[in-house]
Each structure stands twice: as C-alpha cells, then as structure tokens.
Image (cartoon, rainbow, N blue to C red; front, side, top):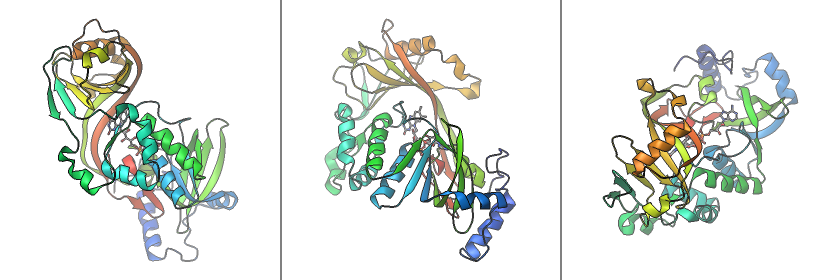
Length: 354
Ligand SMILES: Cc1cc2nc3c(=O)[nH]c(=O)nc-3n(C[C@H](O)[C@H](O)[C@H](O)COP(=O)(O)OP(=O)(O)OC[C@H]3O[C@@H](n4cnc5c(N)ncnc54)[C@H](O)[C@@H]3O)c2cc1C
C-alpha cells in the first residue's frame, strides 16, 4: 500500500499504520463492541449528524449512475458534487453495450437515445491527412459489424456526449427521490465498524455539516481524494497520452465533412495532428490537440489563437472561421487501484480504474 498523501484531507486519521490497524479490527470483529476507530471529535459529530444509508462523493457520470441504481432499489442516499452543475464539456462519448443494458434496466435507455439523437447516424473512425481533399480511409465503419452483438443483446452501443448524458441521469435519479446536492464538497471522513462519518461543505453558504452513512461510494474521479486518504495505491502502465480537448464552432466545416458521419476523425497532418469529433454535425465540434507536458509544453501555451490555427491546419482549411468555446486538458491513463474498497468505502469509476 502506498504511503498516504501528506494533504490534511483525512491524512492524520488515515496513516498507513492506522489503516492496517482498522482493517484488522474490521475484519476481526466488524460489529464488536467498542470497535469504533473514531476520533473523539468525530464521535461527537456523529451523534448530531444527518443520517443516510449511502453517501456518494462525486456527481459526474459514475456518481449519478450510482444514485440512479440505488434509487431503483429504493436505497436512501445523498450525493455530493463540488461543482455547481453537471459537465458542460462533451468529455466521454462512447457508451458500450453493457452500459446501455444497465441503463435500459434502470429505465433510461430511450431518454439517453433521445438526448443523443443528433449523433445517431455517426459510425466508424476515419483517418485522413486533410478533410479538404477526398482522400480518407475508414479504420472501421461499424461498431457492430454483421450485427453479432445485436443478436444477443436488446441494447446497442450509443454515442452520447457526457454533457447530454449527465442531465438525463440527474433527472432520473431525482425523479426516484435521490438527494443530489451540487456545489457541495466532501471535506473529510472517518470510518469505523458501523459506518462512515463525513464532513461536507456547502460551497455557496460555506456551511459545514456532518453526515453519518452506512457506506461511502467514492465516485470522485481519477485523482480521487478518498482513495488518496485511504492510502490505496494504483498500478498499471500510467499515463498514455495528454491532450487538450477544445470545443469550437465553425459554420463551414459541415460542408467539407459532407456525409462522412464519423464518431471521430484522426487528422494526420504532421504539422498539426489531432482528432475531430462531431457534437451536432453542424456547427459544434470538439478537437483533441496533442499536448506534450513531458517536453516542457505548458497548458498556457494553448491560447485561443494557437488552437484555432492548429484546427485550421489539421483540417486543411486555412481560411476556416473558428470560434473557440472551451478548452480542458485531458489525459488517458491505464491505472487500476490496488483494491476497490476498504471497510465501508467503495471506489467506483475512474477512482478505481482509469
Ligand atoms: C476534458 C475531458 C475530455 C474527456 N474526453 C474523453 C473522451 O473523449 N473519451 C473518454 O472515454 N473519456 C473522456 N474523458 C474521461 C471521462 O470524462 C471520464 O472517464 C469519466 O467522466 C469518469 O467518470 P467518473 O464519474 O468516474 O469521474 P469524473 O468524471 O472525474 O467525476 C468525478 C467527480 O467527483 C467530483 N469530486 C471530486 N472530489 C470531490 C469531493 N471531495 N466532493 C465532492 N465532489 C468531488 C468532481 O468534481 C467530479 O465531478 C474526458 C475527460 C475530460 C476531463
């Protein structure tokens, strides 16, 4: 197990020795008398805490899904998400068959397909040195060639941008009675044999309060503060590549793309490469521009002007009007947590595996 981080976030309680001590106590006598592991301060807080069966930290794709699935099972829960709203960046887009089967079970498959209708005819990955010319090749045309998967599943792969998917999950989870609080951050937590005591912060009012839950789900992303606080290490290849995910508007691009309805198009101009992804097949697009921090390239160097110029060169239209509407760094990584849970805390989503 990796050394716990030195951040104040949970670290004083979750030193490596404490973790192994707690693990021993939880394993030996989960319900044994006096096996609280609580600091006296947390003990006092637990007495006055709001009580809930499950606390979910993180209200993105996985936290919202956890809320939805718990709601279907009528299990009470509270979700806290530090951001004020769901993602406005398209982010992840491909939802595989198993994911769609689970959403089908939860009764939201058709709502997701409706939200994703604008991309329903986009299939395949294309590659070309320039979109301006005719030359291009398809790395693959169909995600389910020959309909093999369709014969064994009632669901199918679905291209739905995260900013379209998350509001569907949020509404469905709320309709099922879930208590989902945006603008609310999990500040710290402690666990004992009987539950988890957490301190949360309402970022609008700056009010802190305490929650006592039977279980904590850490859907708090790849840098998971909960995983860090528990001292759970990760293994795997590590970072694979970095890019800057740029959202932009370009009115004339659809004319050039024509009927080549791709999921993604790899643009291979050595002067400016990257991947182009449709948002509405009309004016709104995403471009993934390679970013090389290992060569000392700073994020600040990705100015709007540079991004627009890179996109024009990559696409092969030097006079294309490009309006940059957003930028966010993103890296793909291959890392798996050494354990997916500890005691009453479970890791889910990118906190468990990137
Ligand atoms: C710019 C960008 C582009 C991407 N593009 C792609 C792509 O093209 N394809 C692809 O497959 N994937 C992509 N991804 C990755 C994809 O978005 C993630 O894999 C996915 O969102 C993981 O979901 P998650 O819920 O596990 O974690 P996250 O989406 O990381 O969500 C974690 C949430 O927890 C919240 N949180 C963290 N700590 C706390 C706390 N203490 N209290 C309260 N809330 C907290 C965070 O605010 C966040 O909302 C992209 C990601 C980014 C950022």
